[in-house]
Image (cartoon, rainbow, N blue to C red):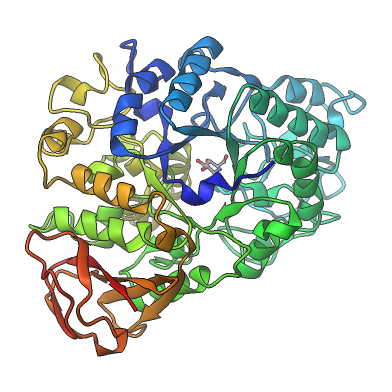
Length: 556
Ligand code: NOJ
């Protein structure tokens, strides 16, 4: 049944709350997406990953689902959703929905039942345990929630604790229970029957927990990981979903996979194993982070080493390529100087540096116009994770000071400011005040201005998307890195059946002279670059200006 269409695809991720509001309540919605399908078509993407639009009390902006089969009224109705998917399909755009089934909302009917009593038929849908110590007032183990604090919440009614690896309003589902797995199969089939083309599976690597839920090793932030990341029955569970649902349709399944090793990833995505098609992993996103949390200057050598290692995974595996999503800071703020004179070149160079790699590229809303991080006061942040970090650190002034500094750079809020459609009122995102602060730079950085400018970041994205889609060399070609020890330049080639693309990106704002003799590409012809006057023909000595990047083509 599988055509593996995703290998040709370029994805666009929509975070619906911040994409486009159609009814003037300040919250992005499905009819807003419908209005912008022509824009997406014009951009040239052919698949969308839509972050959750299901019923939810929004403790974690929709990643806490209270009804898996219906649409949150603030986003619209199921009828709106059907119109949206139809219009996407008519325009050659596939739709991949978020599947959030490591946990549900605590307001889901299953959990409301589960907490009623120990013998409720739904009790075993979640992970309940008695506490430690004689009075049971100590959590069952030392695991921490990814949002900080213990991963357990005490329930007075039944004198037991339930596990929540995210907020206490996101209780973890118990995948040991076959009834839970059957529910997930049914949910997948429900949406697949309605026409969706696949799922992005939220924190799917956490679904199987180690027997006995043992204490984790000491780690002040992410304690317990070694007992639930890709552990022990995950393959059996995914295999069941694949067999009973995903493989019956022409799907693409991409799993969000924090904390995964490459070996684990291969086991999850190797085609012969019938589990998932690819994973979104975060090794690259952590390369400029100390202790997984504190941003440090990018070390390009390490960055390239990771990129190359993933590019060299076995041929029956497949990668996802991304710099941004709704949990990551904006790439032009992260990897270069967004305030300098070369911000456009920077944004375009970043696009070349990953969209030409092997795998399926993902572009996050706003990335295509170079949206950047936002500067907020502590009380302006809206994300549960940021708020929790401030709440925890507030009692310790030096830590609070550090948290404020760090959050400016890495808070998830940076990616969640409303989409900047024009320089008009509310950036044309909404007719009323948006649910979350607009980045004040929308007067300069917006879609409308860029549509009309042939040299804009947006028009560059259109070019590179068009170049990537259906390009045999980029889809099937081999990957070879050059100058791995160079601290400023990322250079590689993609080759297929005697045809080669030579791709070189200057990650810094200083000029670089490069001896390219080893690339054996003298005479190659220019295909694309982020400067207007890059040399038409490749030479053995190349000079790269600030953030300059180019692609040359040669047959040999
Ligand atoms: C990963 C999602 O991308 C993130 O936004 C969410 O908070 C967690 N999973 C929990 O669902």
